[in-house]
Amino acid sequence: MRSIWKGSISFGLVSIPVKLYSATEERDVSFHQVHRDDGGRIRYKRVCQLDGEEVQYSDIAKGYELPSGEVVVLTDDDFADLPLTTSRSIDVLEFVPLEQVDPIYFAKSYYLEPEGAGAKPYVLLRQALEQSGRVALVKIALRQRETLATLRVRDGVFVLEMMLWPDEIREPSFGFLDDDVEIRQPELAMAQSLIDTLSGDFQPEQYSDNYREALQSLIEAKVAGREVVAPAEPVADSGTVVDLMAALRASVEAAKQGRGEATSAPATAKPPKKAAATKAPAKKAAKKAPAKKAAGKRTSASAPKKTTAKRANARKSA
Image 1 (tube, rainbow, N blue to C red):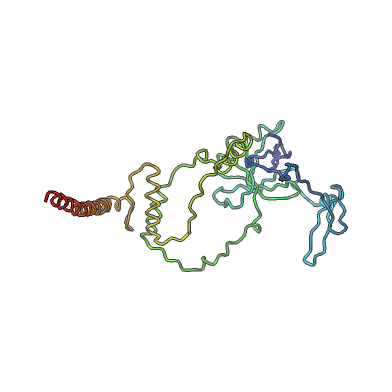
Image 2: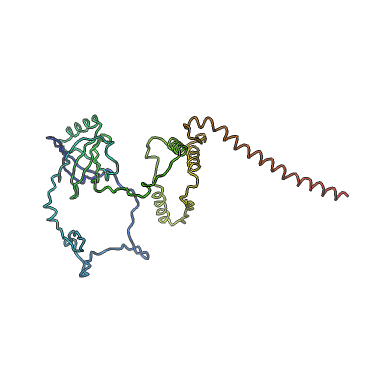
């Protein structure tokens, strides 16, 4: 990994020199825009819309457009004069419980590595932070942008979680929040049963990006010159739930079958265990009854065929 920033963690009179690394990377398949006929790369020119002339990169500045349509031009010198007190430091503001920080604030993660003589104070702060059960709320300026962040420990390394400012979080102003939606207790019990059935420990390694894998296979097939067979598309869901209880019950049954468990979902508002003990035999009996009736129908349906056959033989002998 290559460091993208150097500075120091500053709290009280302690200063810890550190280097910053990106903790994550996207594994998406990247593409270039090319000419369909010959595969040539498509290039774009920076052209001024007023005079139509191509502009050199050194002559490009940042512009802030006003509501009136006028533009305020800002140069590199203007940005250099802005007061960024945390330009080379990670200032610890306070230590807070992690559960009080809503994950919606988190934007991007970075690793911090101690530099030079900063190893001992780095480990000291790491151990003290782990024992406190809290995270450090800090402020940092990165790429000419000052932001809040949290400092926590993961696998013995400080992780800097860049955060959004409170006014950057949108309010969920949706109409259904004002509606009085009635939820029945049996529906709630069935939904809770579904959650219990699908509960488990977080193991992210068991999941994969199926679309990216299929896309990579498609590219490899193109390179090899083989025929590519497109998989069948799944049937689109209409999104309409006719019977909420039936849908929840079916989801519980499907989840249990996927895990190899016995499929006996609760059908009443009673606790899941009691409902399974009292209602499961009744369900099995209900399922067997139609099977017997169906067998009876098949027997009666086949009887006329045998009678007809006997009559035909009698006529031939006559």
